[in-house]
Length: 215
Image 1 (cartoon, rainbow, N blue to C red):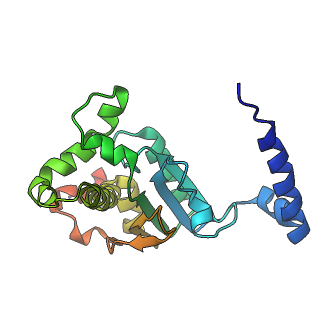
Image 2 (spheres, one colour):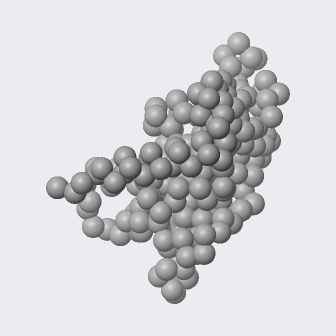
């Protein structure tokens, strides 16, 4: 069995270094968190959210899952989203995928993997919807990365369709949704230009209203 005690030692060193650089750091952190950002990213161990954008603990609220999906039935993701928007008042929600994503790659294959197949079904739907364009990409890795980008854009749209986000916009709350992709090979984030900050670009069927405001 692998020994995990080195992690505890690393933690002590990290805490000590933080205190040397900023003696009041943990005291401030213990009293509040006031992030402007919610990061929805992949659970891949090579994509550490705050480290990538050089933020300290407390500066970004983070939710991660396999292939950075926003499932309409995922109560975990929706609870994080509601807490971030309604209580923390974040101004930006950033869906961040990454090139070479194993979850996206698995969704492109026909082999059964178990429970994860159900989780990845939305990515297979995205593939099917864009099948002609994707199959025109001869290079397999480039095709995978194209689907990674498509997946991020789709998840931004899924966020915009939630009542949590739409109610925030209806209240006049400052809130923008973004789609990024991270490059494992160079450490750089690419903005996909998928930003949404109002329901105006959504199809009418997805622009929901509270029951007493439905008219």
